Every structure is written in C-alpha cells, then in structure tokens.
Image (cartoon, rainbow, N blue to C red; front, side):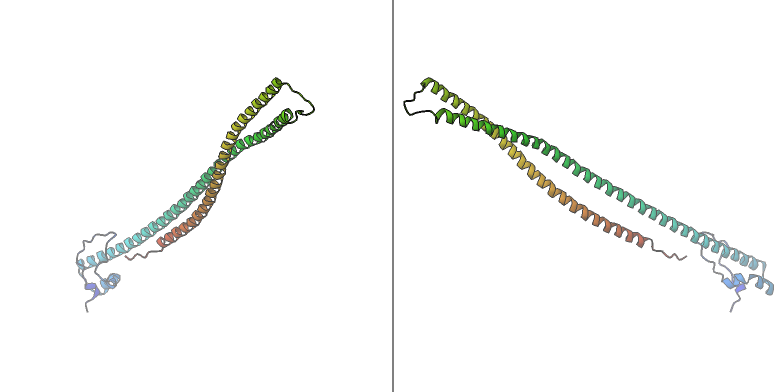
Length: 249
C-alpha cells in the first residue's frame, strides 16, 4: 500500500473560492506532514506540494465556514423580513377592516339621518292635517246645522208665510257655501291622497332599508369569519415557509 506522503496532487494551481472542492490528497497525509518530513527523506518538490495542499485544505475549510455563516445570516435576515412583512400586512388588513366598518357605519348613520329628516317633515304635515281636519269638521257641522235651520225648521203650519225672495237668497247662499265646501274638500282630498302615497312609499323604503341593514350585518359577520380563516391560512403558510432547510456543502 502506498504511503500517504508519496501521494501527489493533480495540479498545484487550484482556484480557492466558494465552489472549491477538497483536493484529492488524503487527510492523513496532510496531517502527518511533519512526521513524514522527519521520518522519510522527501524531495524538495514533494515537500512544497504537500505544504501547498495543506494550505489549500485550510483555505477550503475557512471558505466553508464563511459560506455557512453567510448563509445562516441570510436565512435569519429573510425570516426577519418575512415576519416584518407579515406584521405589516396584518396591520394594514386590520386598518382596512376598521376603515370599511367606519364607512359602513357612516353610511348607516347617513341613511338614518335622511330617514329622520323625511319623517320629521312628514310628521309636521300630519300634525297640521289633524288640526285642519278638526277645523273642517267643525265647519261642516256648523254648515249642516245652518242648512237644517234654514230649510227643515221653517214653520209651515198655522198659516205661516215666508218671503220667497229672501228664501231663495238663503237657499242660494247655502248652495254657494256647499260648493265652496265641496271644492275645498276635493282639494284637501287630493293632498291627502298624495300624502298617503308618500307615506306608503316611505314605509316601503323603511322596511327595505331595515332588510338591507340586516343583510349588511349578516355579511359583516360572514366577512369577519372569512377574515379569521384567511389569517389562519396565511399564518400556516408562513410557518410552512419558515421551516428550517438543511444545506449540504
């Protein structure tokens, strides 16, 4: 079996770098360099080659250590950057959800204010209509009583007489009053019909808005649940990405 000290390398000119591989000389030959020099007679060229091989081997070990340390630093930096990115993403997502909820709340408040303003205006008209209805009812009652007094309660027995002209004037005046009351009643009736239509539409809009608000609440609950699931999936994905990866040189 050949002695380790007699082993020769292929070429002394070897590039030292990141991708450098261990020279072909065996480790015992390099480590026993001093022993071989003391116990055996070697040529000057063989001693120089062995010394150069030892230098190359030490350089190779140093480069492997430097590469491993640099790769470890890069992995740590990558993990730190991913954690920072994930924290920033969560903060932005929470801020976006908060802004969305505030927008929905403002939208609901705006609709409530519009509905309150519409109802407030209609309530004023309804209160005025109650007073007007009472006044018109009193007027109609008084007109009916006056007509009854002018016509039905006239004395027609025991030789009672009446002035035809005055009676005709009274009946004509009563007819004028009845026409005025009829026209006023028709005018008010058209207003009441329009108001009734508006109130019906308002009630429908109110019911529709309530249904939409309930639907919006259900959607917000669904979105919150989906958001929790999404965050959980993102966390699992980052944990899978952060698993340690073994590197063999």
